[in-house]
Length: 240
Image 1 (cartoon, rainbow, N blue to C red):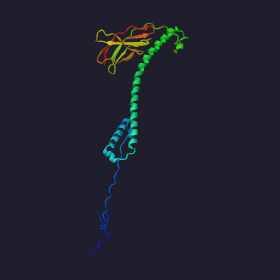
Image 2 (image 1 turned 180 degrees about the vertical axis):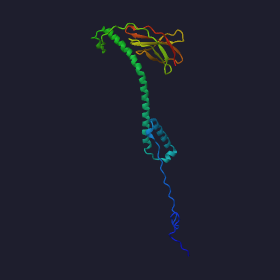
Image 3 (image 1 turned 135 degrees about the vertical axis):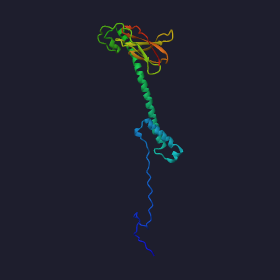
């Protein structure tokens, strides 16, 4: 009866009469969720959240993730809160932009009334420095030589604005001017009368509400302590 050497081994160092070991099953590497929230803007975070909510609500999503944490209700609270905050910021930014655009116009219009009221106080008080403060206005320093009648505005220019129906009209500044008056009329249609388009303390202003494609003529005058100057030459420009 043949006998085998119990210590004999294969080249792999495993004895020939030892059972071959079963290879180990490789461990599964768990995947991670990609968010990158720190690099996203609020609208991008909201969009990613909306996509997640829609996917979780599908039959496959509900079956795979039956008990989400946070719960559906709790997740929607913060999702809707983010949406409300974004809409509020957008609304307030629009209101702020509109208010900033309207502020210069409101200032110009009220400054015209302030100057008119100052003129009334001067006339009613007879220029008495003891009476003027009773109006709430301060008394100006000792006046020098009064500025006489103002000359007509020169170098009146009209150019297309950045938006439809807007023309920018300007002239060379005139010393002593309290208010600039701008009038306009349709240039290509006969018998058109001049219409007041702007009262402003500035020598350059935007005229709005014009009909795009129409040619308009513009003229300006300066108002000072001695009254209104003659009208300037006309400037013509087509409304964009």
